[in-house]
Length: 311
Image (cartoon, rainbow, N blue to C red):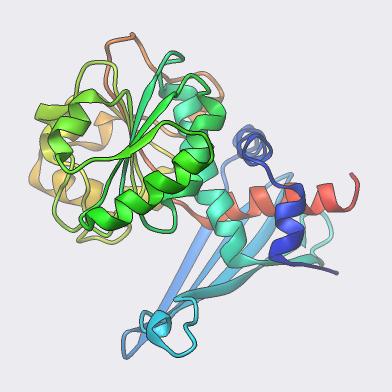
């Protein structure tokens, strides 16, 4: 059994590596997924399992302690590991650092979606939110759409948006912080949103034709990042129906109100990767809901393990 640290993951992972691992994984049969969540005094433990026939199986176990960042010294709010099992014989082949793997999985998931849906000539990206996932998402999207030459950053706290924009500029990226979200939305060719919003931020009335919208942040039944007009402005896709439709407010709320039906979901990543679904015209607005899931961790973990083993 191999112990894989965050440094080991960074040794082999690049955004093209992560995206292609996820693309290859979605050419395999759909995963069998199971989740378990326990909570005590606001602290949570989440255990997710996934079995991808012919590839691998795995378990991701994480704790979520919201007060940890305020400790002295600060501790991460999310901590955990991924157990990777040999699919043929059932033994553990690796234990991987879960937090590091999650960033590659989450941003890689969104980038795979945009590689299938965003126009190949997109130039301006809007990053909504300036938290820990913002820079990975920017880098991942730019890796699959190198035509992106400008990045706008919006955040409720403008200072955090400015700090991220300055960091991007220091790396030679044309970046600026913006304060008017609607105006930024109307200028963007690709929008990625990773916030803790419970009320929609992205309004469909502000979207221009041809925009691709990547929705990452809403992950509970009460959270949303896009309003009804945005969700119905174009065609809606998800990474996985199993991890989005029954669990995430972005879809649960408009489904319950009748604004959407499940038939309005035009495809998932299996459909997109296998060419059964995709953008139908340059002017079409596309939306992609990133719901995550342990199957994505298993895909990345399996690719990392093989790379470290020289296979």
